Image (cartoon, rainbow, N blue to C red; front, side, top):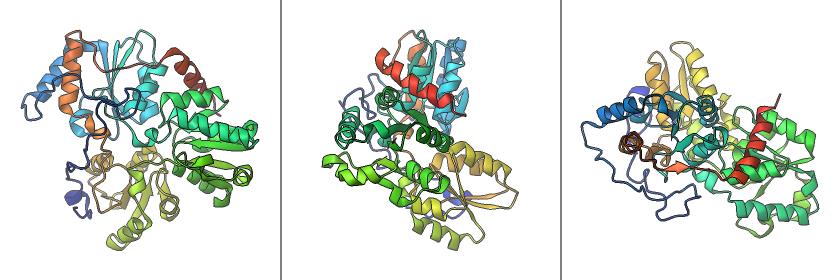
Length: 394
């Protein structure tokens, strides 16, 4: 692994084959892990890929609207009509009703959210069905239904309000809506939890334990003892009835495979290597990392903080590497380094590459609808209810 020490010599890295390991073939199509690409992709070595993408996009004109998540590769981002985090992009899509095709360069749950929020006549397309989210995969509908049964048996279900992170499947969003809960983002998690505790005495937080714990403890003044960890792979979640009854926050045992890599050692090491550095991390990081950081916030917060930072300042960023590399290039007057010494791309997000985008755009331009992401009506109805509760938060 290459040592990450300066913005110039450490952000020019490439993902290893292991980092881009294919997740799942011939899998359940509803899974975040997706299935094989149904078409023949152009070769990555094709020198005309950029021109082919541009030509297909121009041929489609206003019929297509391309969304690019912040963690995408630069080769894909260059063709995005808008960039942002998952919820911003879904709302941008909903605000573009004239676009027949929404090409979401992100991952599966993001495309689902876009389908939920866009019109019935719009078609959401994911360039690679295997572009998923390991965190979202950590909470299935069956597991969450079983968890709710455990809460019912413990006699506390009526006191519990589910709050689900945006990084969850449509099925989990629908469960949340059906059980009186709301969705949250990393930007509004505290507001969502404040609302939830006005509705009930406890919160079931899905599926990212770290965002839930960090928000409860760091932003709301709870103690770590107020939080328990529900493990769906253990009987009763590995918890006693007494532990469930005493808890305020019931955290699902899920995490982001990217942000979960950062450690307290990473923070201590970068402070030694870069004197005077400001450590800025995403709230999906572990609690001890967040506690040791100087600044904590969402992807948009990270971008805005670096834009406002004075020239000559030093920053170590704890989030996905594509974004860190991009903001470092945008701010050459600041020293911006990756928090960890090892390369950490979001491997499934990186599945959306230029060959997949070219194949998608050319297929659509030829009138062939490919890789459509479509949420069934009942799931959409309850998921939208949960999203609307979030939109109504003060």
